[in-house]
Image (cartoon, rainbow, N blue to C red; front, top):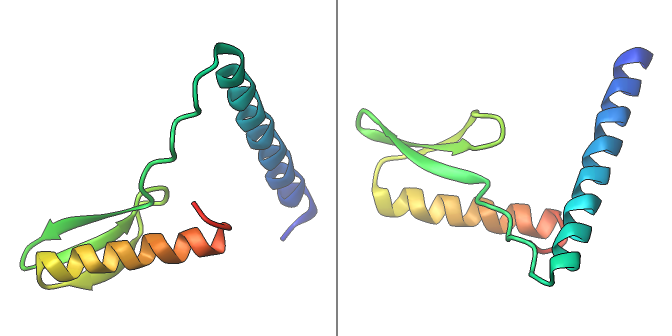
Length: 88
């Protein structure tokens, strides 16, 4: 990655970390638990198939042809993301 682009990515990551710390401090001040993070994936019907879409990027991560299979796929993707992030 180009140096200037890497600096921009690093700067944005630092800003994101600071905003997360500020949110945690705010909830600590008012004595309420911080809100739980939302889902990472959703299943959307497109024609005869269900597309599994990553919410953050909007990219399709997989396809299923029944609602039940799509829900199992979403659950598996969420579980995989939770183990990669250290337990969500």
